[in-house]
Amino acid sequence: MNIKAIIANGLAYGKVIKAHKHSSNHDIYSSNDEEEHKLVDKAIEKAYSDLESLKRDNRDDEELIKVQQMLVKDPLLYGEVIKLINEKHFTAHSALEAVFDDYIKRFNEARTTYLQERALDMEDVKRRVMLNLDDNEAINVEGEFILVTDNLYPSYLMTYDKQIIGVIALNGGYTSHSAILCKAREIPYVLVDDIEPLIGNVLIDTRKNIINEDPKQKDIDEYIKLKIDRESFEINDFRSFGVHIFANVTSNSDLYKVLKYNMDGVGLYRTELIFMNLDRPMSYEEQNKIYTEACDMMQDRNICFRTFDIGDDKQLSYIKTFHKGIDNYKNNPEVFETQIKALINANRYGNMKIMFPMIETNEEFQFLKDWVLRIKRELNNDMPLQIGMMLETKMAVENIETFDSCDFMSLGTNDLTKELYNISREETLNYRVFIKDLINTLRKVVEVLKEKGIGLSICGELASVKPVVRRLYRVGLKNFSVSAASARALNDALLSELEE
Figure 1 (spheres, rainbow, N blue to C red):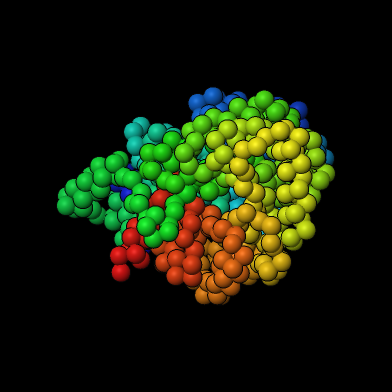
Figure 2: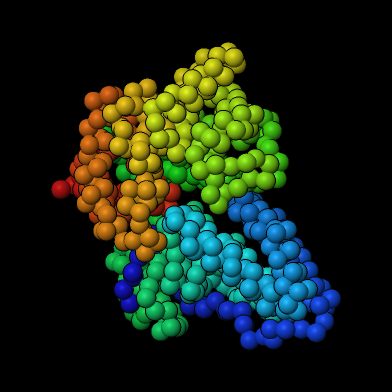
């Protein structure tokens, strides 16, 4: 069976287990509203409790679990469910299903692929609550397995953390929470057109872009050898070519793989995910402890922190959020200043970079840079600090020649391609739709920034797609930042390019 799209690279061999679906064959109306209220409360409380147990057992995924807990206990959603029961006498099943489906529909109809992929998180919450109503379990199996499902929900990966070794799905996206989790866990995650024929034991091989439904012993032996080789993997040293490979991380636990694979450092630390652990502002002490630990681990390598990137689906209960980073910072100055102080005081080795998301103009960047430097002076901190920005908006690309005070820029291709080409979720998976034009656009960006002496890297998902990597290198991009799990794919792509 051919693979339609590779979300996370890797190899896996094992038995296929198909995810159960909750039953929708229930009565629509009830004559006992009070009993339906109790069923709703019971299902929601159990879902919340299950997530709390998951949080204790999966500290690395705490921020994602916290988001799902907030969705489960969303008072607006709950109010709409109770209203349907009281006014239309819906059953708990039909009321919950109607309200969840309405929320999911709104996400799916959003203009951006990023928000569309957040519909999957809401579907995950719906699945968990509805299964509680059915008094059922999604999966009941022992040992390792390859999960086959319509959609990969984050909670599958957290609940069966030590069991899922591969994922075959009908739907998915590169920037979904599930994709991030698979890459962090080095679990191959692929999309196919039809999952029904998959039974027994199968072999996923993203190198060959196939799912082997009838692997022979020689195929299994090759898989075992490759699996052993993977354990001792290290990035090749491409420094003589001026090439560096960095990591995208979401927590300090990801940093161990940066060291294990001998990557050059961290090109993107997504700090907003640690903010989502709490329903209150993070204190200076809490943040400084996290950032200091990260800098200590990376003391001989660069580490680049992106200031909190909140907006769209990533909401915090204690601040009003906006699409643009600078608006979030201007309207929540104490939150921003606390983060900057915690970062600057953690920079004990001079290996830190700070960058801002969703910048559109040089004036926006200069405003934030001046703000950071003022705080640095107030702290009497004289450690070297590079300050840069994500290059991920159409306006910034169109006005690239106006930026003159950045120390560096990092291409965020996930958001940039959506803005430039207004692409759908399906087209996001098919990079061939836009790659030729994007490469031409980036050629100009590379030339301008080289002339200005501004460093450039790429941290979007395209940095791990082999045919794209080769084209990016040829237009002058030499700094790549990917998830640790995508490091092998990037390494192989660069090897094939540089050995020619």
